[in-house]
Length: 286
Image: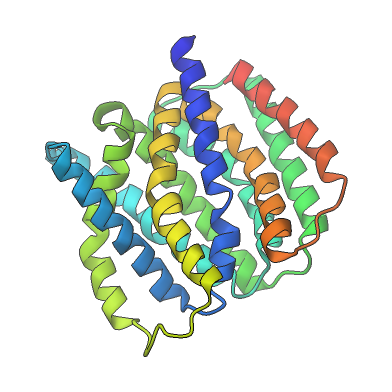
C-alpha cells in the first residue's frame, strides 16, 4: 500500500511538471524552428543526464535493454517533443489538450500490450469516461483546429503512450532517472547533428519568455519530470498511475490562461471535479 501511494504521489508530481510543457513549447515555437527546438532541448538534457550517470557511477544497461531504450527515445525524446512542436504551429496550446486527454488511455493500452498489466473492467470504464470528458471539454474550449495540427497530435500521443509504457517496465530494473538519462544519451548523437543542421543564423533577438520556455522544456519537460513520472509508473502501475494524466490538460489550460492569455471557461472547475472522481475510480480498480 505504501509503495502504491508513493508511486501515485511521484506520478502526480511528474504530471504537474509536464503540464507546463505544451504552453512553454507554444511560446518557444513563436521564434524557434520546431526541429531546432526539439534537437536542442534533447541535447541540453542529454548533457545533464550524462553528468548524472557519471557522477553516480551508473553501470551501462544490458544489451537486451537497448531495444527498449530506443523505443523510449523514439517516443518521449524525439517523437512527442517534435510532433507537438510542429502541431503547435497550427493549433493553440488549449486545443492541444484535446489530445492530451487521450494520453492516459494510450498509456494504459500499451501498459497491457507491452507490460502485461491486466486492470479490471471497471478501470476501463473510468478511464474511458475520463478521457471522453477531457476530449469533449477541450474540444469545446480549444477553438478550431487543422488536419495537419490534429493529425500530428494524434501521432504524438501514440508514440508518447508507447514510450511511457516501455519506460515504466525498464524503470523497475534500471530506475526512473536512469531510464530517461540513458534514452537521452542514446539519442544525443542524432540530436547533436540535428542541432547543427537546423541552427538558426542568429539567436540574438530572442525574447526572455522564449529563453525561459527553452529552459523549461529542456530541464523540466525533458529530464526532471521523467524522474518522478517513470518512478510513479514503476511503483504504482502503468495503467493506474497513467490516469493522472487526465488532470494534465486542466493544469495546462490554467497555465495557458495565466501565461498566454488564452481563455478558460468557469465550467473547467466542474470538469476537474468529475475527472478527480474518474482518477480515484481508476486507482481503485487499476
